[in-house]
Image 1 (cartoon, one colour):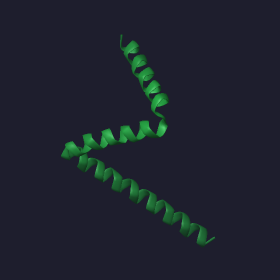
Image 2 (tube, rainbow, N blue to C red):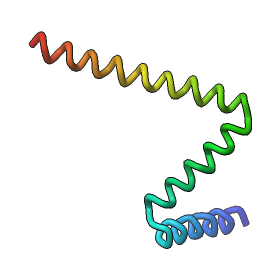
Image 3 (cartoon, rainbow, N blue to C red):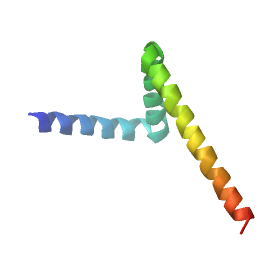
Length: 72
């Protein structure tokens, strides 16, 4: 029963993706996630911290890459 439900959900997602197009489908998913996150302060706080963490990681990685390429 569970497998059938999963297959139906996957089929619906694939058909929605094909029908709407990839960009429209993804932007709709992001808008829905934004609404859910903004409605719950705890999720908003967690997502803000995760976003800052990712920004710091990419910033540090890019600075290290630049520094290593300059001093070669």
